[in-house]
Amino acid sequence: MAYEQLKLENQLCFPVYAASRLITREYQPYLEKLGITYPQYLVFMILWETDNVPVTEIAGKLILNTNTITPLLKRMEQMGFIERRRSQEDERRVMVGLTEKGQALQAEAASIPQAMVEQLRKSNLNVEDLLKLKESLNAVIRFLSTEKTPD
Image 1 (spheres, helix red, strand yellow):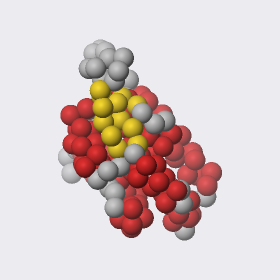
Image 2 (cartoon, one colour; image 1 turned 30 degrees about the horizontal axis):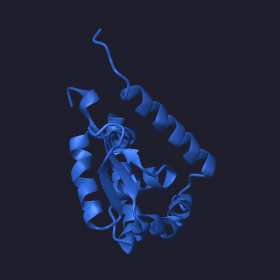
Image 3 (tube, rainbow, N blue to C red; image 1 turned 180 degrees about the horizontal axis):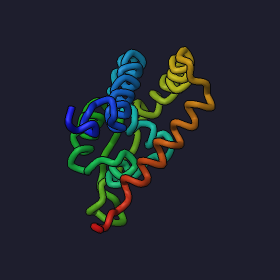
């Protein structure tokens, strides 16, 4: 091949992409029992940590545009997990809060992170390796999500 830099095996992005897809696939059996998707699970984790947050905050934490997150939130509202309402302080802001049904799902989902760690521990990676990987990926995310100025 004339351009070694274009080989799939030489790319950083592909193993990150593939690992993300495969990890998400591992979540599916647990999330199907709850009747939710992985993106919905991510929204729940934000709301279980801090209930009643603006749509823009959810979008920001998930590194998504609000026009991407809105259909997801509409579906969660139709399922009875969340409520969306205008902020009393600033009616331009839409606040998202958990319903009782959404709050109750937290207890059912509490075992998922440990189940995922147990799955990954079946590999030759130990917990320290996984934590280092997480730290490295977070550093890449922080770098790539900051505003860049052209050189």
